[in-house]
Length: 315
Ligand code: 5GP
Ligand code: MN
Image (cartoon, rainbow, N blue to C red):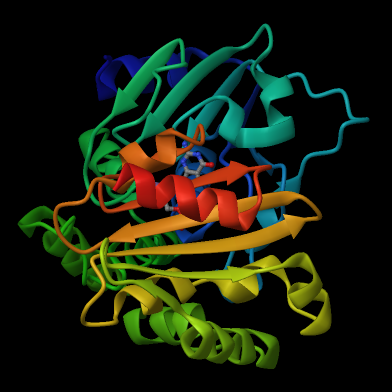
């Protein structure tokens, strides 16, 4: 494992383009940490681009510099001198932008226990969010926190801590939040825009999930599956199901929740959350996924019934 000095030294040495990337279907932490690092390195005078396989979700468009996010174009000839990957536990998680790793120096900055240390330099620390890691990095390097950077980082914190409700929140997380407020981050705006700003299909799908939830009495698993046909019927985007997996876990008898969404015919994205002891990182790993002990995800081509059966067997 490397330290922040190794990383900033490498960044300062580089003459040419730096490309920052992150995982497919980017969430608030992927965008928040990546955008904050992009802005910070630009402020150091670096040529930086933030390139992702998938565009940002619409609940994040309020971020001032969100237009810096570029969607990867397979026809373009990218010639970075350095690639920095944030919030991605494996090289595969970045999807098509993995092409950028080829023949290039890669720095991997992340907070997932399942991280495979795929970079030429790796900094992985199991704290609340990659945004908290980037915050520590910027402080360590004495790089100023501007308002844009602060709001991007705050969004990442809110995403990965469930607005400071998960047990990945520490004294240091609150200290960071406090400093972001001091810089001017508008926390109530961020939470409103990010969580409480859903289009009608999202509201309807949440209601459907609550109403139709399955519960396994024996294993205390609350689950729900949304098929591709449902997404079409409700005219919903993938991002419109964000938050359902947490709401399933709100059931007082549930220990674990499982939310399955058929993103394309035959391809299911799974999300899991755990209230206490059950390690859902381990369960996701049987499908080649990962994440954290209390929040994990995976993608599978098995049917929803088969996935449910395997999850119950593993619990
Ligand atoms: P979510 O269910 O919100 O998509 O993800 C929960 C956690 O699991 C996040 O930390 C996320 O990065 C991780 N995660 C989600 N899907 C995958 C996946 O397919 N592979 C791996 N390795 N991690 C995932
Ligand atoms: Mn994260």
